[in-house]
Length: 137
Image (tube, rainbow, N blue to C red; front, top):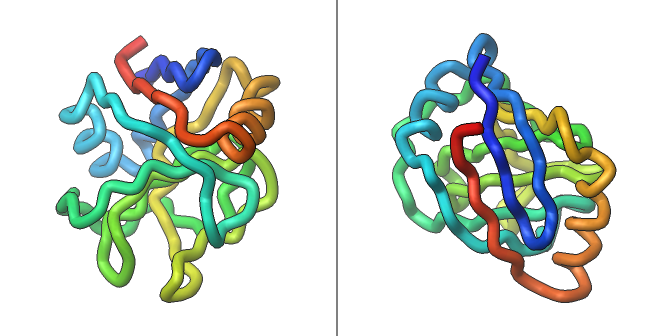
């Protein structure tokens, strides 16, 4: 089992890679580590933050995909009818974009630091973009 350390704003999390259910997504994401970006609040999906990746080609199929990630679940939308993105749910989510409902590959689950997922979401909503770093734990 591979764990990923996530630092977002002032918060630290530990996440488990969902290698059994999303092996291709996990393998591709590991190639990107360490991964630094900005996380912003979603526009259409509800209580979540996202990392827009534009037309970054991930070369991934759908696997372990969902439109309704639970708090602490991280999904990757590999692109297609909308831009490539990573989404972190902190509350109720129906994953969508301006073209409608989407499904993303659930590939990470936060296993430590869940008490700070909602504070991160609210901070991002009210204070704007936060730095985020994913790296091997």
